[in-house]
Image 1: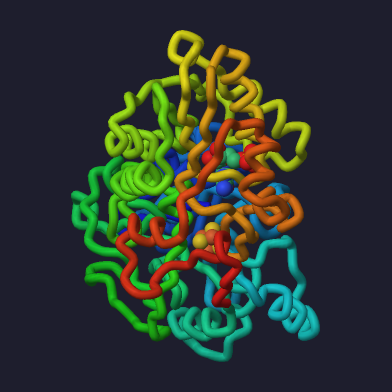
Image 2: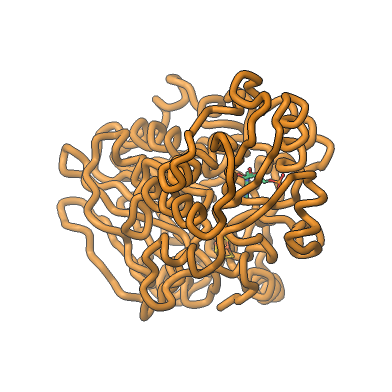
Length: 443
Ligand code: 5GP
Ligand code: SF4
C-alpha cells in the first residue's frame, strides 16, 4: 500500500490526490482520502484506481488544509469497500482517520483481547485495531494515546493519523516500509511512502521518518519529533527489488541505481553468451540495463507491455492471473528471431510469468532463452506488508533452481545471490529484512 499526508496547504486534498497517482503502483484495489478542516474530518474512499474513485466534484468536498491518503492492495483483510482506507472514527476526543502501510504481526491477539473487552469490529483490517486502542487508551491527549496504541502493536507500520487539527506520522522500530518527509513550496509539509510523490507536487525531500519515530504536525510549528522506540532498522529489501518506483529514493538510496547495480552484479556472477539482453517490462528494465552495460551485450526491447492492464499479481484467482499475463506481454519478433536471448526479471513468484514468457519467446523464434533474475529465489512469504502467496505456491520453496528451469522451459536460469543483493543496496551491517529470500523473520 501507499500512504501520504499533507499538512498546511489550502488545497491539501488535491495534493494528496496527485500524490496518490504517483503512488498508484503500490496498490490498485482501493483508494481514499480524508481531509480535516479544523472542525470536521471528511472521508471519501472506494474500490478501484485513484482515477476512478476521485473526480473534481468529490474532491471539492474534501475541505481543509490537511489531508491523508491511501492506495490499497490487500495483505490483511479482504477487498470489500469496508476495508478501504483511510479508516475513519468518531470517538470521545472528536474525529480521526488513519492510513497504514504494512502488516501488524500480533493483530489477531490484540483483536481478540479487544473483542473480549467488548469492542465491535467493522472490518477485517489489522489497522482497525489502532482505532480501538486509541479510543480505549486512558491517556487524555491524542498524542499520548497514539504513543500508547503503537506500543501495543507489533510488525510493520508506516502510519499517518489525521485529527481535526493535527497530523501524526509514525514508522515502526524496524522501518520495514519506507516513509519520507518533505516540504511543500508554500512552507507546508508532506509525508509519503515514496519520494516520487514529492517530485510530482514540487516538494523538497527533507529526510526519512526514522524507524521508531513519531512526527507531530501542528499549525505554525515545525514538526515535532518523538522517539517512541529505539530504532533497529530492518528495511524491506524487496522495495528495491520490485515494489518501489525507480524514480523514488527509499531508505536513502535511488531505486533506479540500486536496481541497475543488481543487474551489473548479476552479469558478473551469472554471465552467459548471448546476442541480446531484454527486460521483462517494467520491473526488469533497470536491472537489464545494468546487465547489458556490464556484459557488453546489446540491450533491446524484446517484449512489449500493454500498459492498460493492471499488475497480474494483484488478481486473486489463478485463472485471472493466467489470462492477464497473456493480455499483458507480447514479443517483438524482429528483436528475437534466431537470437540467443537473455531475459531479465526482478523475481519469480509462482513461475507463471516466466513460463509464459519463455514459451512466447521461443514461439517468436528465439534460438535460446536464458532467464536471469535480479534477486534470490523467493522461498518464503512476507508477513510485513507485501502480498506474497503462501509457501506452497512459491515455486522456489518447492523446487530447486534446476527444476524451476525445467518447469519454465528455459535453456538456463540463474538468480542473484544474497551477498550480491546486499552489495547492491550498500547494506551496512544487518539493516535489511531479507526474509522472503532466507526465511529469517525477525518479528
Ligand atoms: P509469477 O508469475 O512468477 O507469480 O510472477 C512473477 C512476476 O510478477 C514478476 O515479473 C514480477 O515482476 C511480477 N510481480 C508483480 N507483483 C509482484 C509482487 O508483489 N511480488 C513479486 N515478487 N512479483 C510481483
Ligand atoms: Fe520485504 Fe521480503 Fe522482508 Fe517482506 S519478507 S519485508 S517483502 S524483505
